[in-house]
Length: 261
Ligand code: COA
View 1 (cartoon, rainbow, N blue to C red):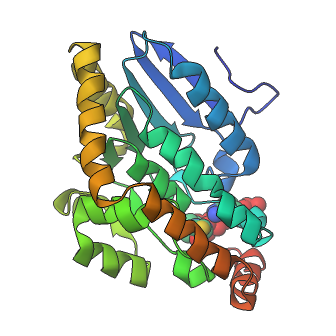
View 2: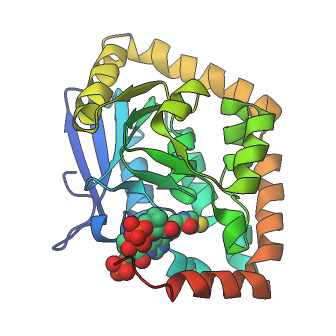
């Protein structure tokens, strides 16, 4: 299924080679911000490839050099209501990523913010270029990181660090990300694709069934500390915040901001 979506600029690019599926978020002019078209395209791709036994590993990456994904599309997020929060639009997608039968690797250059960071967290592994910057700036926008960060970030870096990152919204650069366990490898930006591919090929050489079952076993550990109830709680919290005046004020301020000279 080369090209999950069609048109002059498909939201997502897909390519399978030697058992490795590469999915590329393709909206570089908006720093690959996750809009509805991209969310639909990712759902379609994951549904299409999940049953394919020839896919041993997935690499998820962003087009362009500036971002993996700079978060949910704030123009669309601004208009989402309580009912959207309860549907968990990003959360449902990221859960699908997390439960994809084969291992997933996020190959990150540049910004991985908000939902972009949570998407990387939903992957099994993260490889970063030196330009990578991870962060959860949601509280600055009057909302919560409700698509997995409250439990996946805590599981990766510990509750104490997760608290600091979620409360401050500060950026974590590549070397710090490596030190705190947010990523497993840092390489030069130009080598991110090759490093992710090398990791994917190592995984792909092993028995696919043994690998998939190992992933399922690890998912039991993750679910034991934060299962579906944690996500439901996050959706309800977000429903409260999605209709708050402060959210509208803060998102309008982002949308009206002056661009850097
Ligand atoms: N939603 C929608 N559009 C976004 C976006 C987002 N999350 N992040 C970036 N963009 C768009 C910008 O609006 C801009 O579009 P334009 O050229 O049509 O104006 C384009 O991507 C480039 O971003 P810009 O802000 O001009 O680049 P910058 O280098 O000045 O700043 C960031 C980069 C990442 C610091 C800044 O874009 C930013 O803060 N983005 C929002 C991050 C965020 O809060 N994400 C969490 C959402 S929950």
